[in-house]
Length: 262
Image (cartoon, rainbow, N blue to C red; front, side, top):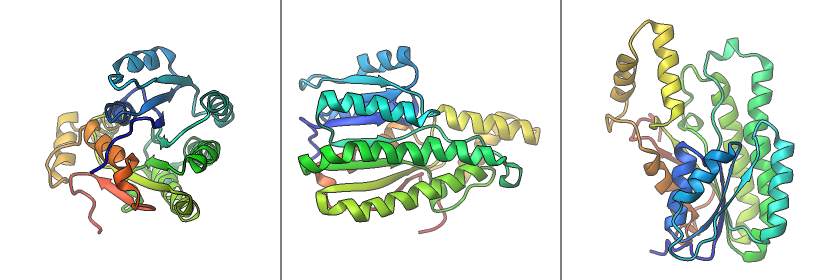
């Protein structure tokens, strides 16, 4: 199986923590040169030092805030002008705040739409010309299992994640002819700051302890535990590899079997 990413360049968004950081590390181990993208330069510098460079990989980073799609677009296009190549794009950013959808303010939808779909779209537009030239492209979106089964208490997130999945499938249909695949990785409950925040919120609202909430959530998962970020990253890394060339336009749950639908 060809998992070798030597001489490939990857742009990994939200790569200073959690799943994004794990994806950057995994791609680097497979030989890719990684461009990290996040808003905290100090954390970016720290992660940069962690990345494997034993195969001569040249890693770098871009400082930009996904709350400002215009800034992200300008910063990435400027770096692409310098690099002149890009083979892998991993779209990833933190999810919207939780809560019932009926209580959501319209601005919450607009903010989430910009952070997720608009940023994903602009980044894809920026990298696709380089992927076409290389005749190799992998666009991987880290979304959520809510794409298949909406999650209670995450109304805005459910809505926006579904929109991103539909966008991705449309993009996959259009780009497949150029050797570019577009796929979605759908993490379930994963040991990141995001799941900690959800547990804290549920505990506060229900009056139960955080440990009780955590145990209840784990009991819903056939694997009876949360995922580690590296386990989600492994799925993304496979989809980025030459071995996954004929896998296009799909949603891959990495959730320990929790999602109830096929």
